[in-house]
Length: 246
Ligand SMILES: C[S@@+](CC[C@H](N)C(=O)[O-])C[C@H]1O[C@@H](n2cnc3c(N)ncnc32)[C@H](O)[C@@H]1O
Image (cartoon, rainbow, N blue to C red; front, side, top):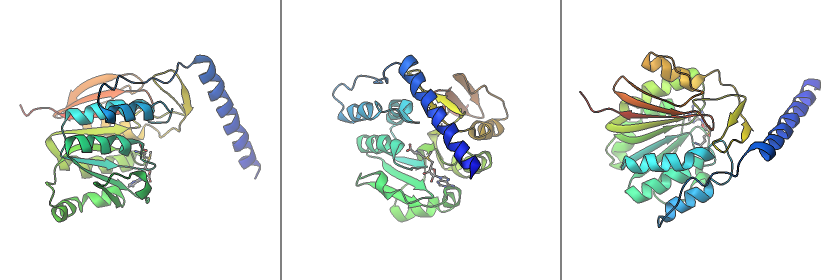
């Protein structure tokens, strides 16, 4: 009972610290670009003006998504649909199929008519993915795979093992939360409260590629047939692009 009370005071103190810090030190949230005459980009930039644990990454995942001209996008981890908001726009512009998977019911996350949602543990569903594609008459090759689920080391190792074989020869994989800390920092200098996942996601990637990175800094690497790019802001975003076969 007492520890519950102390926990609440500690959280309140952290929130006051965050608000003071952001009021004094942060710049205005970044618009992230000029929409030109693309309504989808205008909507995404407007959406990103609200600071969240994913706001920095909305425009980058749109441009990454558009540049790989996907036919099939798979999103693992949907929650309220921040990333879904972007991927449904990429899917509309590219004529792609969008499939989201979450262990919870996230049916309210999107109103996009061509959206597919599967409520399941993502690692378990990977074993049924080909059959699901066959039933939907879809080529079972993922052009854009997005992973944003438990952020835990063992689960991320299992996701990498289960899902990377389904990625197309020129496919792309995006991981969120590759730089989780008690506080995370956005590109506009603002802070927010996160949690320490013991480097779960980045450690699983390090194990897969047999290396060690400093995820608190941006980096580029090329390993195991992939080009790997990483940005530390907003809890970290790491993008893997398959390199052409030698
Ligand atoms: C950080 S949230 C996803 C946020 C979402 N991508 C967004 O941008 O709004 C993580 C989600 O992963 C889901 N999740 C956790 N473990 C999972 C698992 N084993 N299989 C599928 N989904 C899982 C949770 O239910 C939660 O909705």
